[in-house]
Length: 120
Image (cartoon, rainbow, N blue to C red; front, side, top):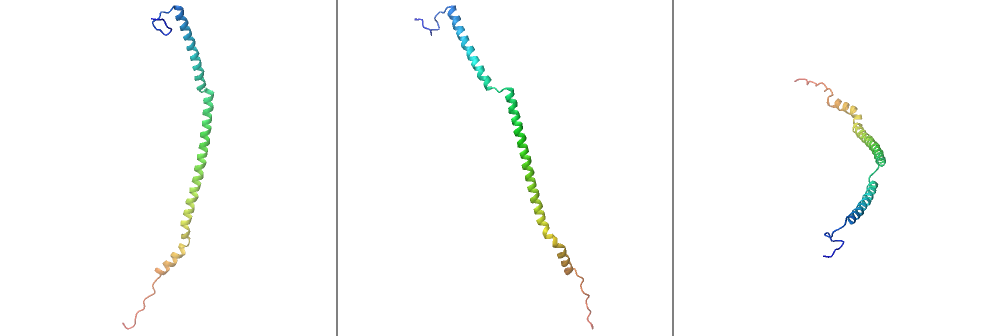
């Protein structure tokens, strides 16, 4: 069998093995260092997290203020609508008193005394 670099059964010297292991070790360290740099770039720092948290709190406070403002405006509008309806319902009753008295006077007026016929 011919000896080729890809032959797994070819004998190697200790020096060749050490050189290959050192080369693999160097490649692995470089790869890990590169991966570490990429990972650090992707991870947020504590300061970035604090800034994002502050931004979210500010946005929530603004949204809460807007919600309260919208709710207050809606409630005022509903109150005005209810008061207008109540007022329109009560308007016709303003002249009830005189009409009721006139009706009562006509219906419940004392009846004139009956005259007796003579000769009966």
